Every structure is written in C-alpha cells, then in structure tokens.
Length: 541
Image 1 (cartoon, rainbow, N blue to C red):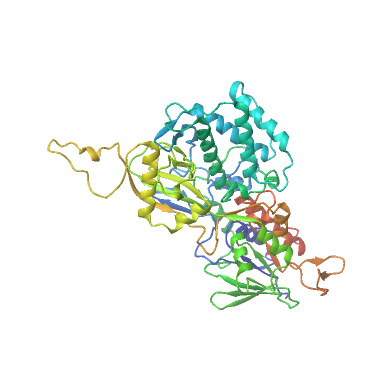
Image 2 (tube, rainbow, N blue to C red):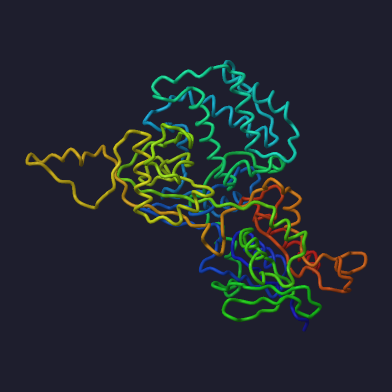
C-alpha cells in the first residue's frame, strides 16, 4: 500500500486550520496530516476571552465588510452572529463620542467634524477610492480641497501615507484661511493647533488599523492595493473563536497537537521525506510538505537569530521580503469602571513641545485616540495602543496603568476619576454618603491588557507594507520552496535535478497581497496553499 504524503502545518491559527480543514475534507483521506501548535490553545492571533463578566476579543475583533467575506459566511452559517449575551462592539458608539482636549475642554462637534471629513477623504483617496461629495457649504469645500490636492500629487512613488496626510492637511489649512484665532471655550488652543491635534488623533486611530508605529513608515503606493469588502463592519456575537472551532471541528482527534514548538526546519533534500522538523522537546518529525503559518514577526526573528529557523537559510528573495515588510504591535487595554453609561471619549493631546502639556499624563497615553465602552451598557472601557506605546503597555504593572488612565481622563475631561480601593462607602450620621463617595465619581476597578509584542509565538500583531517594500514582497512571501525551474526540473541557481517540490510552503495574513493584516487574508492564504497541494496530487474531489 502506497505511503500517504505526510503534510505538517505549523500553527493552529486561521491560516493553518483553514488549510487543514480543506486538505482533510477535499482529499478523501489521501494525506497523513498534522497541525503542530507551539502554544496551549488554537486560534493564533484570534483569542476570545472574558473580562468583568463580559465577552471580549484579545486579538482579532472585526469582520471587515460583510459583502463576500468568507469569515462572515462561516459565522452566519454557524449561528455565531447572534447571542443572548452582550459582546464587544455589538453596537456602535462612535456617533455619540465626546471629544476632549488637553486642558479640560470639550470640543464642539462642529469643530471636530470638518477635520474628520478631511482625514477620511484623504485616506479614501490614498486607498484609490472615489469620494462622494454630496455635501454643500464648508464640508463640500473640504472634499474639493482634498480632491484637488490629491490630483496635484498623484503618483507619489516611494512616499509614505504619513507625508501624504501631512501635506493634505497643509493644503487644507492654506485653502480655508482661518488664521490663528482661538476657539471659544478651548483655553489656550489656537484654531490651527486644535485642528492639527484633532487630525493627529484620527492619525493615531489609523495607526491601530495598520499596526505601523508611525504612518510615515507606511508605503503610499501600496495603500491603493489593499482591498476591503463592501458592507458594514461587524463583530461576532459568539466570539471570533467560534469560527476557529468550526474549522477545527472536522479534523479527527489527534491531528492538532498543542505545545509542539518547532525550533528548526531542515529542507531542500532529495530524501524520501525531504523536510525534517526539530521541536523544542528534542523530538524530530519528517514530512513531504510543511506549511509554515507563523507570523511575520516570528519569521523576522527566525532569519535574524543565531543558526536561524531554516536550514539551509531562506533564499534571498524570501529573506529580503521578510526584512522589508513591516510588522507592528497593536494592543488593547480593557478598563473596568464603577458605573455604566460612561461616555465614549475621543482624546486630543498637545504637541510634544507645547508649553501647555500636562506633564502628569504619561507618554504612553499620549497617542491613544479613544476610550469607549465596549457596548452602550457596559462598565468595560476599551482603548487601543500601537507601536512603542503598545510595547510599553505590556511592561507596566496594573497599578501604573490605572494611574495613567486616571490622570489622563481627569486632565482632559475635568471629571473626577478615582482608583477603587475596595472599601465600602462611608456614611454620615444621617445615613447619606460622604461627599467623596458620591456616585458621580467614577472609580476604576481593574484593567486587562493584551501582550502580542512580547509573546514569542507572535512577536506582534499584523503586517503592513512599509516604505521600501511593496506588494511584490507579499507575493514573494507566498512563494513555495524550493523554487523549481519547470522546464528543466532543477532548483533555481543550484543545478540540482529532481528535487522534491513544495517542501516548504507559506500561509498567513502576511502572504496575501490585497488582504494582508486581516483574518480573511489568513483564511484565503490557507485555502491557497491547500489547493496548491490538492492540485499537485490531482485531488479533484
């Protein structure tokens, strides 16, 4: 009886389990299949959890557009989009957001909205979208300014999204001629400094979308290649892990092996089992094909470490792509407060060199754009952090994080916020609460942070196309090894005949040219590699 081809998938996240699901269901049991996962759970950068009796997502959160999304289709078919229990971002609170500037001033929506329109128009233009100008008056003028500016700079090869946005803001300011007048009710802020700070706030939200520490690191030309599905963006009622569990549910027991960390991949062999996997416990597994679905952060560390993850080392086209592409850290901070109906806050901070900065606000809070309840009736607030601030958040003790949040909210809103010391409220002789225990004082009870940057199994959150890289690098990430010249049957550059094909294959969000950084990009990449093997073995089921 012929030996079944041995396929090992490294990583039990979205890409790995999608590939395993497809290979198992479409091959009529033609493969000896296993999924090895370095951690103690499945899901990878998807990790539905619980905090303060609420369902939360420590990692992937959104279905980015429901029109045509395979993730939406799975969640819908499995009944995962409805739940009797509340869940993170189940309802949008963005329309009710209140914006506060450093110094304790609330900014009127009439000041925020034009800047929001400008920023969104510039981002849509950078992404190659047509913007609709249905507004008259001042907002219509902003659309015209953005479109005119875009036409004047189209084709900024080698430029960054950050420089495009900055130039767009300068063009807007030069066109509207508002001068340096102050804004009523906003203390020392000039009109220009306030609008610029609001623009920076929206830029900081964009950083969390991309994982770039700075938008000046984000390649402008590649931005228009990124694709979104149409329709609304939603979260999954029963949690993102429900999609993962559905993919894994078809696999026989024992196919997925947890706490099996790969330390070296030996490949490019003529042997009957051409790939040799070494594990942290000293064990070894041989395979015909390996699908590597680890994060770009792990691959970056793997080519830089002594000895490297791959033996022989990856060819230059692959290692150079890994080095050039960007991979950042995005973390969430969940904060439990003492009362419901806490408002959604947008936070506007002074520039670093401003004499009006509150020195008490810690630096790691200063590029946080929002703090909002995870749903309208929740006592859990959520803030997003990216880049250096996200990494710093991982190192801080809970007490220091609570103090930083207290200081920030107090300095921006003027509202009294206290740490919950766990003591019962004291009462006066007449039975009333002491003034400092008034229910209007918001107390912070506890916090929880994600820690994607420091986790050696991830080393960050998701990829982006950095200045100096391109979509071609994402395509290079997806190329299987060894590279075979189809005409000669030889390995490119080696002259070695009849080397086994598809020894090492790559999947994961960082291997998809138009849907990188997303769960559906990871899903598509897993399908791609599974189909590559099914085609190779002529499994037309």
